[in-house]
Amino acid sequence: MSYLLDKKTKRNKLIKYIISFLVLCVLAYFRSPVFNRLSSFSYFVFRPVLVLGNNIGQIISGTGSYFYFKKSLLLENENLKFKLDEQEARISNYNSILEENYKIKEILGRKHKDSDMILATILSKQNQSIYSTIIIDIGAKDGVVSGQRVFAFGNIPLGHVAEVYSNYSKINLFSNPGEKVEVVIVGNDVLMQLIGRGNGNFEMILPRDFVLEKGTEVVLPGIDSYVIGIVQTIVSDPRDSFQKVLLVSPVNIQELKFVQVEK
Image (tube, rainbow, N blue to C red; front, side):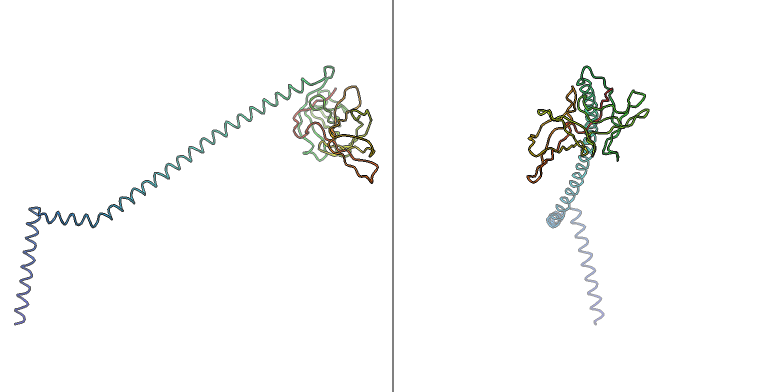
């Protein structure tokens, strides 16, 4: 009896499945509004997902465009910076040549009319030499002899020729440490001894009651008053009967490119 009931139940389920399938086919064929409602319901359920996916796609696309644009700007900026550096280098080189040309003309223009000097280029300066000398690019073949005085700008004494070779010469500076030279204090006509301290600096030892002001010039003895040093500082001690005067050369030797050798 139980067997007959189970068989009948299975047959009824099969019939229901067949009828349901046929109904779905009919609805699909005639495009029933039920499908429209199902479509609307599906759209309502999945719309947030679709919108989110679309927004994420736009964000990713926008981010890619941003990084591409930024990279393009960086490349353009680097290119412009390179061109700017190139132009600055050209301008700097042009200004250097122009300044050098101006200085040569200035040097030649400031010579005394009755003086006869040879223009020379400095090959090495005292900060590059352990012997506190400078080396110039003229020598015996140019008429240079030992003992000749050397000037900056045609009228500022720097030192004298110490050694002469065929194509170059060594110059001892008046400011070399321990170097001594006789000078005259302008305004007092007093002959004193100037002692080099190195790198364009000098000192003098004077009596404590000797009045001397900052800015006072000292010159080499002779008809032409060549300024060799300018007073910068006066160091005195009431307990000492002497005072120390510190002086500096009118020119910065480290910035010089040319000198003149007096014949």
